[in-house]
Length: 199
Image 1 (cartoon, rainbow, N blue to C red):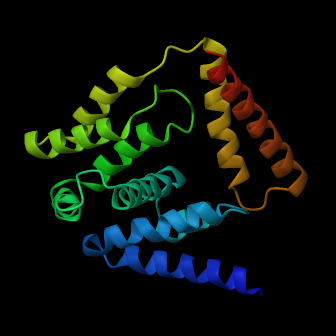
Image 2 (spheres, rainbow, N blue to C red; image 1 turned 180 degrees about the vertical axis):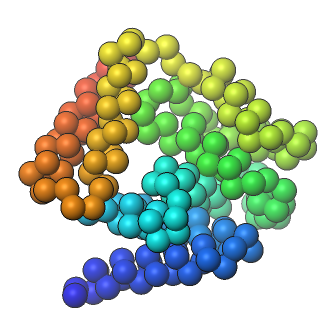
């Protein structure tokens, strides 16, 4: 086993261990899940999902929450003096789902939403904390503000792209089928990026 493969296996083991520790280790799990999903090849995400008895979508939501928190830690969103104190407070008050929702609109991997600026991210995070918004209310509000209107074929393509992700991450998929699914997924993504640039 190569050093890279050994490192991936250790990340997987640490993720499972953190998840089994329960709620007190959920934030730690998001970081490990983020790294496992980033590795993302040959079924690593699906393997982790099976090991903790959750769905692939759930693991990806945990990973998205971890990525969102990492972005917030790396940006001086609230100003250098209060940044980490406020972020620590937000982490204590909000659920992982809040961060996953913010991450979905911030990352905008499907190009379904208008871009969210860093100042918007800050404003919504403050509002959610100060006004005790549920994750559901946050998602509804962001969806109403940022959702693009898309043609029907793009909605179908987006659904197909999600299904292709599940196929690519499945265990035991023949390499030719995995490769074909990856090529189709990349083609759909590149076509959508070109359309967004042309808008």
